[in-house]
Amino acid sequence: MARTWEEKLGAKVIDLDEVAREVRQIPKIRAKIESKLGTTDPRELQNIIFSDEKKKKTLEELLWPDIVKKTEQLLKDYKKNGEEVVVIEGVALKKTRLKDICDEIWNVEVREEEALKRLLARDKNMTVSLAKKIIKSQNKAVEKARAGINCLGVSICCVCHDGQGNILLNKRTKKCRDEWDCWDNWGGQIEFGETFEEAIKRELMEEANIKPLKMEKGGSLTVLRKIRGVDTHWVAIIYAVKVEKKEYRSNEPEKLQTPTWFSLDNLPSPRHSHFAKDVMAVKERLEQYAGFGNISLDSLMDRTVAS
Image 1 (cartoon, one colour):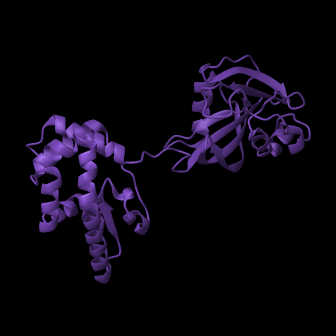
Image 2 (cartoon, helix red, strand yellow; image 1 turned 90 degrees about the vertical axis):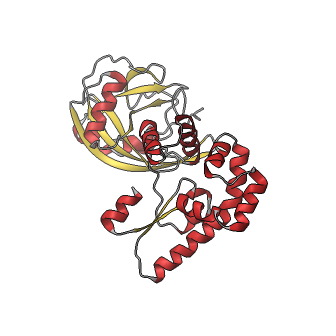
Image 3 (cartoon, one colour; image 1 turned 90 degrees about the horizontal axis):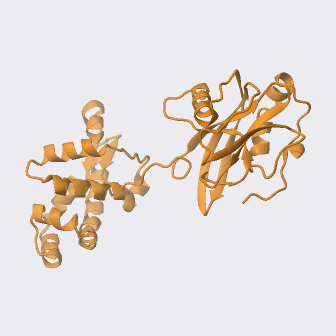
């Protein structure tokens, strides 16, 4: 990807692997590597460090201070020459202070078979075994994007109703991410490339073979919570979804149990901590078009403490 920026957009690219190779040629660094690891031969070093995590860490401690200094100097030189965009490419970027001077950091995930193909094409003498060790090491170094945890998660929430004042809820099990044994609305993460309505249809069909008859967009909510000590950040898009009033069975009973119809004056407990806010986000839709009377936040609140 970095080379695409260079070739098509004229951006300057700093490849940290290339910088590392230059740093390894510095006499004092070569001497330290020879002393600590017994060789300076690139192939021998690869076999050593990708077979032994301690030795890999030793080499990183020897190289990274100078890699960072050299990269910072290159950045200064590019800035002095008026370069507007510089791309730093490197698996271990986020382990160094270089991350603090980047405007954006992108994680690019490559399928293992494709990564293996590229490594072997770049180095004809590399063995498949060594290439796999390198890929495994790189995968450990890259922090995978995890929606809602280290990047923003976007979800769809469906308040399913029958148009006559009843809503359909499900009960969460311990296989769910949080709020076990609580009653909740329907929905889940929006997948890349989906519209809101496509996500609704997919989620409801996956969860309980529910077919939307009418979908009406309400509001959206920013959901900031701490789950088992981890900060999470989601944006939930809330829809009022009219569905046929009939008995449904969960397609995911290990996660969602007992799809059941309730009126708002006879709600079960405990309920998900965001249940009331979700319903209030479609309050006008429910009151005007779904047969519900006046809906108040207080009437929706559940005083039960969720487990």
